[in-house]
Length: 183
Image (cartoon, rainbow, N blue to C red; front, side, top):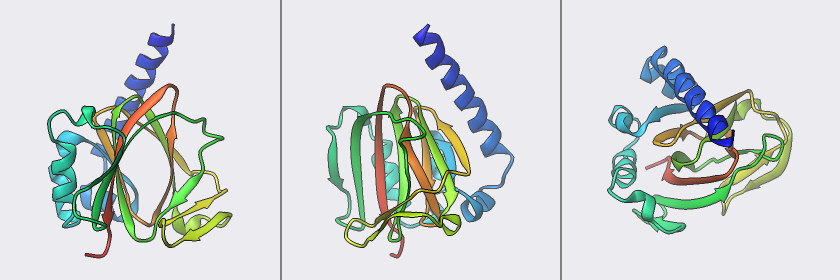
């Protein structure tokens, strides 16, 4: 029964993914909301930021799934990746977070992750004030939308995108590339 639920969740995620990504032009997605796409389509987004070329090259390397959890410097503090393997949370446990300096490219290697989203400008309930050293703040606001991100897909969150990651059951294996916005 558990395998059936995981398969159903994955199928729903893939269907949502195709519906959400094919109806809107890429330049419109970049301006108005987060971006969700399979890694095979990464080339369609590299022009959005000079650091995306190196970030996607890193994500597309062979055996990416064998990297140990931790930080990988790709260009010092300008571009780095964080590999993690953690248990998923419930929607109620996940908090919206936002960054001011870095763009997140969150790539799901294994597991099915659901991510909440809300424009940062619409977040009014600050849970934890902005920490300049960690480049993060948390909100008590509720996500406006939830998106299922199947394995092999990535989501790009710009500073204007508050996001609630790591929602799911079981282990989620992922990589977050942190790309300094101003280069």
